[in-house]
Amino acid sequence: MKVQQLVILAALMACGAAQAEIHGYADGPKLPGVPYCVHDPARPQPRIITTGGTVVVKAPSDAVVLFDGTSLDAWTPGWILKDGAMVAANRDIKSKESFGAIQLHLEWRLPAGREVDGQGGGNSGVFIMGLYEVQVLQSNNNKTYPDGQAGALYGQLPPLVNATSPQGEWQSYDIAFEPPIYKKGKVTQPAKVTVIHNGVVLQHGETYLGPTQHRKLASYPATHPETAPITLQFHGDPMEYRNIWVRPLGKRDLPN
Image (cartoon, rainbow, N blue to C red; front, side, top):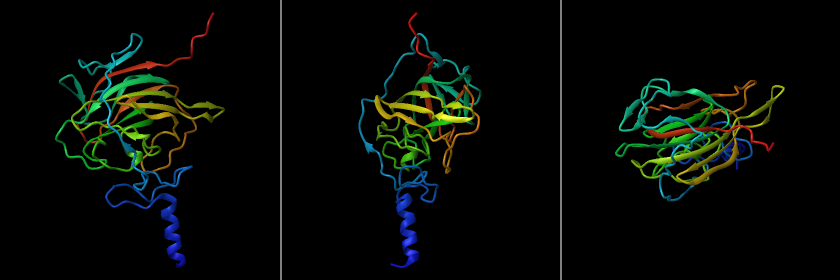
């Protein structure tokens, strides 16, 4: 085998050989600890499972209700209120209130009958603190690069399984998030997240490499806010959201 062929083979082995039927980026930066690149189409597809569908949970008494189907007042302007749902339009929106460590519940869906292809047609995202994305994507019967599927830590870590219900059905996310801890300008504990999709664990106490990036390797900035708004992404598709509430997670109460 010629030296040039060996170099090409080594590059493919480092980040995975692209699969023609899956859109992705086989030439991206290599992710630490795995033989794949950011948005690598050759990364193994998460196993597909069937769930019982959306888990509807009413807001607990100590929750901050961000959307109950009646008003968009908790968010910056831009989206549409229709039939008890928030419909993505025009631009990303942010919660007017800021949060750090949280428990977040929300429900989302893509209306039936829309053409979906990879990252196009049914795409949105939940950015905790406006920085850390949990991908929202119509991944039922829709292949894409695994670190861009529903429930992925976008550009970093695929979900354990593909638990997405068919198009037109409501989906639920339950997310527990802890922001990174900094000491003397250095990260001593990275941001951590658990994601449950339709009652199924997709991410279990996983860590972020840093704030979400597209086609770049994430890393932590020199400084970081203590709290920040939640951002819902408009990716050109009319994704719908409902029943959004947040429980800020403070320090554990200690006995007197």
